[in-house]
Image 1 (cartoon, rainbow, N blue to C red):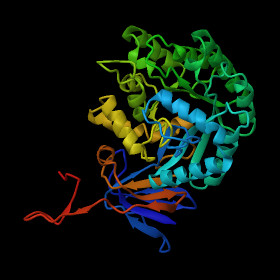
Image 2 (tube, rainbow, N blue to C red):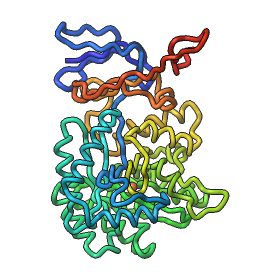
Image 3 (cartoon, rainbow, N blue to C red):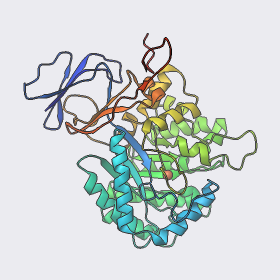
Length: 424
Ligand code: FE2
């Protein structure tokens, strides 16, 4: 049993106690009475949030940076070349080891739910088997959801569809796609139809890399919304990246947003990757390339931010810190109003959990006793400071602790330590 006393919640409630028992939250409120045997933690008014959730990641490539060589230019094309060189050398043991190490990082950062795409275009399905093993291994402390991702194109790669079905048969959770990478716009649309029908047949969720380009005429999100509506897949389908929406004609977007809303298609932006990989053909002005996050949110569409890559051939940075992701998303989308900044926190917590369909998520009675205590008093401060995860709790047990960030000062006439929180 564990009780956290005097916490602040993301919705602004202060002075709250959270009592947990047998892995569930059993009571919430001020000054709760707890049994004597109950371990008590004083939150000292800091922010207690549901855990971070990353709605878009590639765990089969993570932490492989430098293998077999560095992406010296840092471009998408050299990244693809490096990944192609590494693929024949991959072993299941190495994939598992890197994924487990990443999950350790994730837990330390309070990231307890990850949706990872897994490349199914390797006939051996090496990465699929490795990540299915990892999913089982980490289940006590992290929800890992897998998406069968035909990286080389469902129709463009000869064995992709058969491999994707084999991956689903082995237990992969959801169906991925990459329509903008098929040979033609028509083939892309056809891949969306095939994949959505497969999802309807098997009762699965869909999450496609969709329109991940700067092409203002890429229209696969429209097709995805159409088939979602036609097949009754409402709420189960997600368009990831959607970067072409950044460059689309405004009039067309005004038609597209209600269609997405009607089909309850979710959207995932990946700010760190979109800002670095998109707009590379531009001179100046250079487009940002991230999808229209505030407009999607205003249209009533659930939007999450994903990390996409950490230390892999495409992106040699990252640390499983979803507050870094939220901070980048906030800046790129210019979401600086008070409401919008809080929405960026939701994009790496509740919105992502909704997209994954996580059950028992949230700080409420009856939910899983999963939460993270942050060295911040509210979501905006958490993003600003990329706040330390003082304590991470999974099913009522502390699984990670990080000391508070502080610095000792030696300045004449100044305090002995520095406090980054501006108390008003
Ligand atoms: Fe991705």
